[in-house]
Length: 299
Image (cartoon, rainbow, N blue to C red):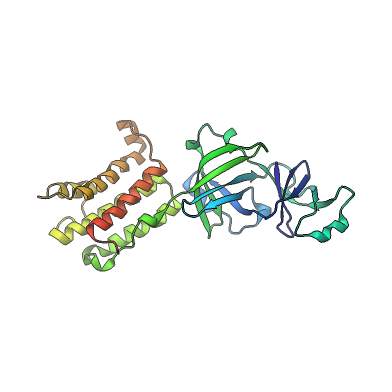
């Protein structure tokens, strides 16, 4: 199965061997790019010009609550992108019946893409890259979490939004001590930017910085101590209190334990698995918990 788009009207057709029919209502079509390395984000297109797209995503459904999309990918293969097609008259262009042949088909020059089958390229979902939908200035990042073969030979792909920052509360700057305010705000801003742009290792690293800044500010406020100490030292100070704040200690410890996993030598030395997207999401949740527990989050 192939997907074809009229460059003049943006109407969508599907079919094979140069014969097709209209897809109506027209589906949402997005320019897609695979993000294998963080540096690939710098190569996102500046516009949605389908004429230069090598990979597109056809959206079949989207759940805004769970942030899950389902749809199909199509890629451009060797050959011309605008071959001659014979297609049925589109419901939105009834006047084209005048140009149709005896079989009710008309000739059109269409941009076309072939079905893209990820299952033939990878051994498991863990090896699939992140997908960027959109342009350099307006894009979202998605993880491929499911592949289903269809009778048409296409694959129905399930995408989940790469990150959800709804759990990261807004910081209450009035509650921050002056000596630490700039550092806390800067670390949280960097974390937000990293979640949307970089991989899980970078997210965990930024979470560690944010946890150190938040706990450092908290301890400075309550006992004038440790505004610039390492996260491990801050955790030990909290453990040494008469009534240790167990929830705060546990959240900070999770982040501290995840951080070494981004370093290949630590993975080998301690027999650790690499950081996954789910680990990064957990670390972001822990930052939100820390902010609420120490009173730096707006209600």
